[in-house]
Image 1 (cartoon, rainbow, N blue to C red):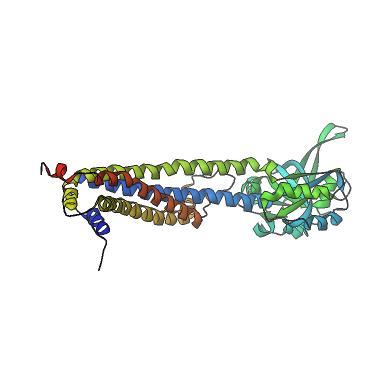
Image 2 (cartoon, rainbow, N blue to C red; image 1 turned 120 degrees about the horizontal axis):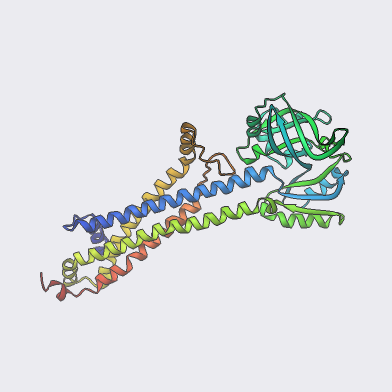
Length: 411
Protein backbone atom coordinates (compact mmCIF):
# COMPACT_ATOMS: atom_id res chain seq x y z
CA UNK A 1 0.00 0.00 0.00
CA UNK A 2 1.35 3.40 -1.02
CA UNK A 3 2.25 5.83 1.73
CA UNK A 4 3.63 9.36 1.20
CA UNK A 5 7.26 9.26 2.30
CA UNK A 6 6.90 12.26 4.65
CA UNK A 7 3.85 10.77 6.35
CA UNK A 8 5.44 7.33 6.65
CA UNK A 9 8.72 8.58 8.16
CA UNK A 10 6.88 11.01 10.45
CA UNK A 11 4.84 8.15 11.91
CA UNK A 12 7.97 6.03 12.31
CA UNK A 13 9.67 8.84 14.24
CA UNK A 14 6.62 9.14 16.48
CA UNK A 15 6.64 5.43 17.34
CA UNK A 16 10.40 4.93 17.43
CA UNK A 17 12.29 4.35 20.68
CA UNK A 18 14.84 7.07 21.36
CA UNK A 19 18.20 6.83 23.08
CA UNK A 20 17.42 10.19 24.71
CA UNK A 21 14.54 9.38 27.02
CA UNK A 22 14.15 13.01 28.04
CA UNK A 23 12.85 13.84 24.55
CA UNK A 24 10.27 11.08 24.83
CA UNK A 25 9.28 12.40 28.25
CA UNK A 26 8.75 15.94 26.89
CA UNK A 27 6.63 14.59 24.03
CA UNK A 28 4.55 12.58 26.51
CA UNK A 29 4.12 15.66 28.72
CA UNK A 30 2.96 17.63 25.68
CA UNK A 31 0.40 14.98 24.83
CA UNK A 32 -0.87 14.70 28.42
CA UNK A 33 -0.98 18.49 28.73
CA UNK A 34 -3.15 18.74 25.64
CA UNK A 35 -5.40 15.95 26.86
CA UNK A 36 -5.94 17.51 30.29
CA UNK A 37 -6.33 21.02 28.89
CA UNK A 38 -9.00 19.96 26.40
CA UNK A 39 -10.79 17.77 28.97
CA UNK A 40 -10.88 20.49 31.64
CA UNK A 41 -11.96 23.14 29.13
CA UNK A 42 -14.87 20.98 27.90
CA UNK A 43 -15.91 20.16 31.48
CA UNK A 44 -15.80 23.74 32.75
CA UNK A 45 -17.66 25.11 29.73
CA UNK A 46 -20.33 22.44 30.22
CA UNK A 47 -20.75 23.46 33.87
CA UNK A 48 -20.99 27.15 32.93
CA UNK A 49 -23.54 26.24 30.24
CA UNK A 50 -25.45 24.37 32.92
CA UNK A 51 -25.57 27.42 35.19
CA UNK A 52 -26.69 29.51 32.24
CA UNK A 53 -29.46 27.01 31.42
CA UNK A 54 -30.66 26.77 35.02
CA UNK A 55 -30.80 30.55 35.35
CA UNK A 56 -32.93 30.77 32.19
CA UNK A 57 -35.18 27.77 32.83
CA UNK A 58 -35.61 27.63 36.60
CA UNK A 59 -34.98 31.07 38.06
CA UNK A 60 -36.29 33.08 35.12
CA UNK A 61 -39.09 30.55 34.78
CA UNK A 62 -40.34 31.56 38.22
CA UNK A 63 -39.75 35.32 38.27
CA UNK A 64 -41.42 37.78 35.86
CA UNK A 65 -39.58 38.01 32.55
CA UNK A 66 -41.46 41.12 31.40
CA UNK A 67 -43.89 43.11 33.51
CA UNK A 68 -46.46 45.84 32.93
CA UNK A 69 -47.57 47.66 36.09
CA UNK A 70 -49.82 50.57 37.00
CA UNK A 71 -49.85 53.27 39.64
CA UNK A 72 -53.23 51.94 40.80
CA UNK A 73 -54.93 48.56 40.93
CA UNK A 74 -55.71 47.03 37.51
CA UNK A 75 -59.33 45.91 37.72
CA UNK A 76 -59.71 45.15 34.01
CA UNK A 77 -56.66 42.94 33.63
CA UNK A 78 -58.78 40.31 31.81
CA UNK A 79 -59.06 42.78 28.90
CA UNK A 80 -55.33 43.53 28.88
CA UNK A 81 -54.10 39.93 28.67
CA UNK A 82 -55.25 39.25 25.05
CA UNK A 83 -53.49 42.40 23.82
CA UNK A 84 -50.26 41.41 25.58
CA UNK A 85 -50.35 37.89 24.14
CA UNK A 86 -50.53 39.29 20.59
CA UNK A 87 -47.10 40.96 20.95
CA UNK A 88 -44.18 39.21 19.26
CA UNK A 89 -42.21 36.79 21.49
CA UNK A 90 -44.97 36.69 24.14
CA UNK A 91 -46.09 33.12 24.91
CA UNK A 92 -48.48 33.93 27.72
CA UNK A 93 -49.62 36.62 30.16
CA UNK A 94 -51.07 36.51 33.67
CA UNK A 95 -51.97 38.95 36.46
CA UNK A 96 -50.15 39.12 39.76
CA UNK A 97 -49.78 41.23 42.87
CA UNK A 98 -46.60 41.22 44.89
CA UNK A 99 -46.05 41.95 48.57
CA UNK A 100 -43.37 41.31 51.15
CA UNK A 101 -43.63 40.14 54.71
CA UNK A 102 -42.46 37.63 57.27
CA UNK A 103 -43.73 34.13 57.99
CA UNK A 104 -43.76 32.79 61.51
CA UNK A 105 -44.53 29.31 62.74
CA UNK A 106 -43.53 27.37 65.85
CA UNK A 107 -41.21 30.15 66.96
CA UNK A 108 -39.40 30.27 63.59
CA UNK A 109 -39.40 33.42 61.46
CA UNK A 110 -38.44 33.89 57.82
CA UNK A 111 -38.75 36.67 55.25
CA UNK A 112 -40.96 35.95 52.26
CA UNK A 113 -41.85 37.46 48.90
CA UNK A 114 -45.53 36.75 48.23
CA UNK A 115 -47.04 36.60 44.74
CA UNK A 116 -50.80 36.90 44.48
CA UNK A 117 -51.76 34.87 41.41
CA UNK A 118 -54.75 33.53 39.51
CA UNK A 119 -54.28 29.72 39.40
CA UNK A 120 -56.04 29.61 36.02
CA UNK A 121 -53.54 31.90 34.29
CA UNK A 122 -50.31 31.29 36.24
CA UNK A 123 -49.30 28.11 34.32
CA UNK A 124 -49.06 30.27 31.17
CA UNK A 125 -46.16 32.29 32.60
CA UNK A 126 -44.51 30.11 35.27
CA UNK A 127 -42.96 26.65 35.61
CA UNK A 128 -44.17 26.21 39.20
CA UNK A 129 -46.92 23.72 38.26
CA UNK A 130 -44.17 21.38 36.98
CA UNK A 131 -42.42 21.35 40.35
CA UNK A 132 -45.30 20.89 42.81
CA UNK A 133 -44.37 18.08 45.22
CA UNK A 134 -47.55 18.35 47.32
CA UNK A 135 -50.88 19.96 46.48
CA UNK A 136 -51.64 22.08 43.39
CA UNK A 137 -52.11 25.73 42.52
CA UNK A 138 -55.83 25.06 42.18
CA UNK A 139 -55.97 24.74 45.96
CA UNK A 140 -55.61 28.53 46.12
CA UNK A 141 -59.20 29.78 46.38
CA UNK A 142 -60.44 33.28 47.09
CA UNK A 143 -61.37 33.74 50.71
CA UNK A 144 -59.73 30.52 51.95
CA UNK A 145 -56.37 32.23 52.51
CA UNK A 146 -54.30 29.29 51.38
CA UNK A 147 -50.59 29.61 50.63
CA UNK A 148 -48.10 27.63 48.53
CA UNK A 149 -44.47 27.66 49.69
CA UNK A 150 -41.14 26.26 48.55
CA UNK A 151 -39.71 23.13 50.14
CA UNK A 152 -36.69 24.99 51.52
CA UNK A 153 -39.03 27.35 53.35
CA UNK A 154 -41.32 24.61 54.71
CA UNK A 155 -38.34 22.54 55.89
CA UNK A 156 -36.89 25.56 57.68
CA UNK A 157 -40.20 26.31 59.41
CA UNK A 158 -41.09 22.66 60.04
CA UNK A 159 -44.35 22.82 58.07
CA UNK A 160 -46.56 20.19 56.45
CA UNK A 161 -49.53 20.64 54.11
CA UNK A 162 -52.54 21.62 56.20
CA UNK A 163 -50.52 23.46 58.87
CA UNK A 164 -51.36 27.03 59.85
CA UNK A 165 -48.81 29.80 59.38
CA UNK A 166 -48.89 33.50 60.19
CA UNK A 167 -47.96 36.19 57.68
CA UNK A 168 -46.72 39.45 59.21
CA UNK A 169 -47.06 42.46 56.94
CA UNK A 170 -44.76 45.48 57.32
CA UNK A 171 -47.78 47.82 57.50
CA UNK A 172 -48.50 49.03 61.06
CA UNK A 173 -52.06 49.13 62.43
CA UNK A 174 -53.08 51.47 65.30
CA UNK A 175 -54.68 49.69 68.29
CA UNK A 176 -55.48 50.47 71.96
CA UNK A 177 -52.15 48.82 72.82
CA UNK A 178 -50.29 51.04 70.37
CA UNK A 179 -49.09 50.57 66.80
CA UNK A 180 -48.71 46.88 65.93
CA UNK A 181 -47.91 45.05 62.67
CA UNK A 182 -50.69 43.42 60.67
CA UNK A 183 -51.08 39.66 60.98
CA UNK A 184 -52.95 37.14 58.84
CA UNK A 185 -53.27 33.39 59.33
CA UNK A 186 -52.84 31.19 56.26
CA UNK A 187 -53.17 27.47 55.62
CA UNK A 188 -50.37 25.69 53.76
CA UNK A 189 -52.07 24.06 50.74
CA UNK A 190 -49.10 23.19 48.53
CA UNK A 191 -45.32 22.78 48.40
CA UNK A 192 -43.07 23.24 45.36
CA UNK A 193 -39.41 22.38 44.84
CA UNK A 194 -37.67 24.00 41.89
CA UNK A 195 -34.18 23.30 43.23
CA UNK A 196 -33.20 26.97 43.21
CA UNK A 197 -33.02 29.87 45.64
CA UNK A 198 -36.70 30.69 45.02
CA UNK A 199 -37.61 27.62 47.12
CA UNK A 200 -36.62 29.55 50.22
CA UNK A 201 -37.82 33.04 49.42
CA UNK A 202 -41.06 32.92 47.44
CA UNK A 203 -44.68 32.01 48.17
CA UNK A 204 -48.03 32.13 46.35
CA UNK A 205 -51.51 33.14 47.46
CA UNK A 206 -54.73 33.82 45.56
CA UNK A 207 -54.81 37.10 43.62
CA UNK A 208 -57.81 38.69 45.32
CA UNK A 209 -56.61 37.54 48.75
CA UNK A 210 -53.46 39.57 48.08
CA UNK A 211 -55.56 42.60 47.16
CA UNK A 212 -57.53 42.20 50.40
CA UNK A 213 -54.32 42.08 52.44
CA UNK A 214 -53.16 45.31 50.79
CA UNK A 215 -56.61 46.86 51.33
CA UNK A 216 -57.08 47.36 47.61
CA UNK A 217 -60.03 46.65 45.30
CA UNK A 218 -60.11 43.22 43.67
CA UNK A 219 -57.66 43.19 40.79
CA UNK A 220 -53.93 43.01 40.07
CA UNK A 221 -50.99 45.33 40.48
CA UNK A 222 -49.19 44.03 37.39
CA UNK A 223 -49.36 41.79 34.36
CA UNK A 224 -46.38 39.50 33.75
CA UNK A 225 -45.44 37.88 30.45
CA UNK A 226 -43.54 34.76 29.47
CA UNK A 227 -41.30 35.10 26.40
CA UNK A 228 -39.89 32.67 23.88
CA UNK A 229 -36.71 34.80 23.82
CA UNK A 230 -35.75 36.33 27.17
CA UNK A 231 -33.35 38.73 25.48
CA UNK A 232 -36.30 40.35 23.69
CA UNK A 233 -37.76 41.46 27.05
CA UNK A 234 -36.88 45.19 26.75
CA UNK A 235 -38.42 45.40 23.26
CA UNK A 236 -41.54 43.53 24.41
CA UNK A 237 -42.01 45.94 27.33
CA UNK A 238 -41.63 48.95 25.02
CA UNK A 239 -44.16 47.53 22.57
CA UNK A 240 -46.63 46.76 25.37
CA UNK A 241 -46.40 50.28 26.79
CA UNK A 242 -47.27 51.74 23.39
CA UNK A 243 -50.64 49.95 23.50
CA UNK A 244 -51.53 51.03 27.06
CA UNK A 245 -52.45 54.32 28.75
CA UNK A 246 -49.53 56.52 29.96
CA UNK A 247 -49.97 55.65 33.63
CA UNK A 248 -48.60 52.16 32.95
CA UNK A 249 -44.88 51.47 33.31
CA UNK A 250 -42.77 48.42 32.56
CA UNK A 251 -39.90 46.32 33.85
CA UNK A 252 -38.12 43.12 32.84
CA UNK A 253 -35.82 40.45 34.22
CA UNK A 254 -32.65 42.38 33.41
CA UNK A 255 -33.41 44.71 36.31
CA UNK A 256 -33.68 41.88 38.86
CA UNK A 257 -31.39 39.13 37.55
CA UNK A 258 -29.42 40.86 34.79
CA UNK A 259 -26.32 41.21 36.97
CA UNK A 260 -26.33 37.50 37.79
CA UNK A 261 -26.66 36.55 34.12
CA UNK A 262 -23.88 38.99 33.13
CA UNK A 263 -21.65 37.61 35.88
CA UNK A 264 -22.13 34.06 34.61
CA UNK A 265 -21.31 35.12 31.06
CA UNK A 266 -18.22 37.06 32.19
CA UNK A 267 -17.05 34.19 34.37
CA UNK A 268 -17.54 31.77 31.49
CA UNK A 269 -15.45 33.94 29.17
CA UNK A 270 -12.63 34.52 31.68
CA UNK A 271 -12.43 30.90 32.85
CA UNK A 272 -12.42 29.70 29.24
CA UNK A 273 -9.58 32.08 28.42
CA UNK A 274 -7.52 30.99 31.42
CA UNK A 275 -8.05 27.30 30.75
CA UNK A 276 -7.25 27.78 27.08
CA UNK A 277 -3.79 28.86 28.23
CA UNK A 278 -3.28 25.26 29.40
CA UNK A 279 -3.77 24.12 25.82
CA UNK A 280 -1.44 26.88 24.64
CA UNK A 281 1.29 25.80 27.07
CA UNK A 282 0.93 22.21 25.91
CA UNK A 283 1.30 23.39 22.31
CA UNK A 284 4.53 25.19 23.23
CA UNK A 285 5.73 21.92 24.76
CA UNK A 286 5.28 20.39 21.31
CA UNK A 287 7.61 23.06 19.96
CA UNK A 288 10.30 22.27 22.54
CA UNK A 289 9.98 18.51 22.07
CA UNK A 290 10.24 18.78 18.27
CA UNK A 291 13.23 21.12 18.51
CA UNK A 292 15.02 18.48 20.61
CA UNK A 293 13.94 15.75 18.17
CA UNK A 294 15.39 17.77 15.28
CA UNK A 295 18.68 18.14 17.18
CA UNK A 296 18.69 14.41 17.95
CA UNK A 297 17.90 13.47 14.32
CA UNK A 298 20.41 15.69 12.55
CA UNK A 299 22.24 12.71 11.14
CA UNK A 300 19.03 11.11 9.89
CA UNK A 301 17.99 14.38 8.28
CA UNK A 302 21.37 14.68 6.55
CA UNK A 303 21.11 11.13 5.20
CA UNK A 304 17.61 11.79 3.90
CA UNK A 305 18.82 14.95 2.20
CA UNK A 306 21.71 13.09 0.52
CA UNK A 307 19.23 10.47 -0.68
CA UNK A 308 17.27 13.19 -2.45
CA UNK A 309 14.71 14.35 0.10
CA UNK A 310 13.81 17.98 -0.48
CA UNK A 311 13.58 20.60 2.31
CA UNK A 312 9.78 20.48 1.85
CA UNK A 313 9.81 16.73 2.54
CA UNK A 314 11.88 17.20 5.71
CA UNK A 315 9.47 19.92 6.82
CA UNK A 316 6.48 17.64 6.30
CA UNK A 317 8.11 14.79 8.23
CA UNK A 318 8.38 16.80 11.44
CA UNK A 319 5.04 18.48 10.92
CA UNK A 320 3.47 15.02 10.74
CA UNK A 321 5.24 13.97 13.94
CA UNK A 322 4.05 17.05 15.88
CA UNK A 323 0.55 16.84 14.45
CA UNK A 324 0.22 13.20 15.53
CA UNK A 325 1.08 14.22 19.10
CA UNK A 326 -1.53 16.97 18.89
CA UNK A 327 -4.23 14.72 17.41
CA UNK A 328 -3.75 11.97 20.01
CA UNK A 329 -3.74 14.47 22.90
CA UNK A 330 -6.73 16.40 21.58
CA UNK A 331 -8.92 13.40 20.78
CA UNK A 332 -8.09 11.73 24.11
CA UNK A 333 -8.90 14.97 25.92
CA UNK A 334 -12.17 15.38 24.05
CA UNK A 335 -13.29 11.85 24.96
CA UNK A 336 -12.27 12.34 28.60
CA UNK A 337 -13.95 15.77 28.72
CA UNK A 338 -17.24 14.46 27.33
CA UNK A 339 -17.27 11.60 29.86
CA UNK A 340 -16.56 13.92 32.81
CA UNK A 341 -18.98 16.64 31.62
CA UNK A 342 -21.86 14.20 31.32
CA UNK A 343 -21.27 12.60 34.73
CA UNK A 344 -19.94 15.42 36.94
CA UNK A 345 -23.40 16.44 38.17
CA UNK A 346 -24.23 12.98 39.51
CA UNK A 347 -20.71 12.42 40.89
CA UNK A 348 -20.57 15.68 42.86
CA UNK A 349 -24.20 15.25 43.89
CA UNK A 350 -23.34 11.85 45.38
CA UNK A 351 -20.25 13.27 47.12
CA UNK A 352 -22.25 16.20 48.48
CA UNK A 353 -25.02 13.95 49.82
CA UNK A 354 -22.79 11.17 51.14
CA UNK A 355 -20.38 13.38 53.06
CA UNK A 356 -22.78 16.23 53.87
CA UNK A 357 -20.39 18.85 52.45
CA UNK A 358 -23.03 21.42 51.41
CA UNK A 359 -20.91 22.29 48.36
CA UNK A 360 -23.54 24.38 46.59
CA UNK A 361 -24.73 26.62 49.42
CA UNK A 362 -23.22 29.70 47.76
CA UNK A 363 -25.07 29.20 44.46
CA UNK A 364 -28.58 30.06 43.35
CA UNK A 365 -29.31 26.34 42.80
CA UNK A 366 -28.64 23.40 45.11
CA UNK A 367 -26.69 21.15 42.73
CA UNK A 368 -23.98 21.42 40.07
CA UNK A 369 -25.57 21.61 36.61
CA UNK A 370 -23.82 20.55 33.41
CA UNK A 371 -24.91 20.91 29.80
CA UNK A 372 -22.63 19.53 27.10
CA UNK A 373 -22.87 21.49 23.85
CA UNK A 374 -21.31 19.75 20.89
CA UNK A 375 -20.52 23.04 19.23
CA UNK A 376 -18.26 23.85 22.19
CA UNK A 377 -16.56 20.47 21.87
CA UNK A 378 -16.05 21.01 18.13
CA UNK A 379 -14.62 24.50 18.69
CA UNK A 380 -12.22 23.35 21.40
CA UNK A 381 -11.03 20.39 19.33
CA UNK A 382 -10.54 22.60 16.27
CA UNK A 383 -8.56 25.24 18.17
CA UNK A 384 -6.44 22.61 19.89
CA UNK A 385 -5.62 20.90 16.61
CA UNK A 386 -4.86 24.27 15.02
CA UNK A 387 -2.46 25.21 17.84
CA UNK A 388 -0.82 21.80 17.61
CA UNK A 389 -0.32 22.22 13.87
CA UNK A 390 1.05 25.75 14.20
CA UNK A 391 3.45 24.54 16.90
CA UNK A 392 5.08 22.20 14.39
CA UNK A 393 5.97 24.87 11.84
CA UNK A 394 9.08 26.38 13.47
CA UNK A 395 10.80 23.06 14.38
CA UNK A 396 9.97 21.64 10.94
CA UNK A 397 11.41 24.67 9.14
CA UNK A 398 14.48 24.48 11.34
CA UNK A 399 14.93 20.82 10.37
CA UNK A 400 14.67 21.71 6.67
CA UNK A 401 17.56 24.19 7.00
CA UNK A 402 20.04 21.59 8.26
CA UNK A 403 22.93 21.18 5.81
CA UNK A 404 23.93 17.53 5.18
CA UNK A 405 27.68 18.25 5.14
CA UNK A 406 27.62 20.12 8.43
CA UNK A 407 25.46 17.46 10.11
CA UNK A 408 27.67 14.54 8.94
CA UNK A 409 31.02 16.17 9.61
CA UNK A 410 31.40 14.68 13.09
CA UNK A 411 29.47 11.44 12.51
